[in-house]
Image (cartoon, rainbow, N blue to C red):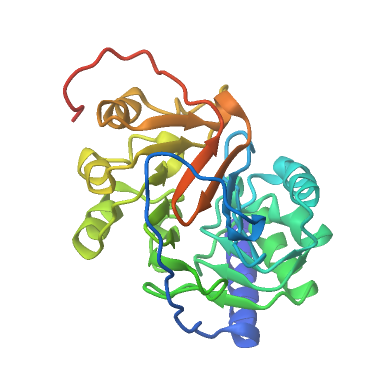
Length: 309
């Protein structure tokens, strides 16, 4: 009965939020850029797209600053990570978050929002629409209502209007999924020719769908589900063909993340590997001609060899 109680309460709150704020954003137009191997310093800071992979240990949190100054936060780690995320944003001079994206209701993605929603002003929230049965999820919905945060549910194919030169597209979301991870919002962020694929905790079944529907090629990949074996198939990794991949996980996690075969798939593809567990916060700075990753890649110690199936 306890789980049913939380599920019903969460569903009621979610329905209320739909009534208060559901709508579909209009598309935006992507700008032009050209990639080259070296990174050229931009003449002015506002020409950069910055993507910050915040070290929240076993979880995800990604802060994006657009060239026009708008801000976006994708997930916020677990409850313990909330203070770190708020401190990090304030250190970056953030007082307003223009767009929050809550990819799915697992605690290691939404828990930190309890602190963020209390301490920061949020202009808009995009949610997967997937309900959950936890206290954390119920508190998350309650805070959205109390703080009167404008609330929308993601739709496949929609584009977020944040900067006319940057396209942010929802490639996948599934509020009807039986489990949380397959419900995850997958985003592709494109600044000219530079693409960043943010995969949240999507699984291999959804990866197959994404391969059929989209051109997934991206310079930078946020590795799905912290490097789990349930994601990051060889076919998916090949389709993305990233130059750099970022793993977000805790060195002492109990799940064995990232699994060796996932690391090996990317390593043997020639991808530069980065990890919040190894480097802490990782910042990617992108201009119209290239990008720079402000962290050192790590060597997993694998001998060169064939692709790992």
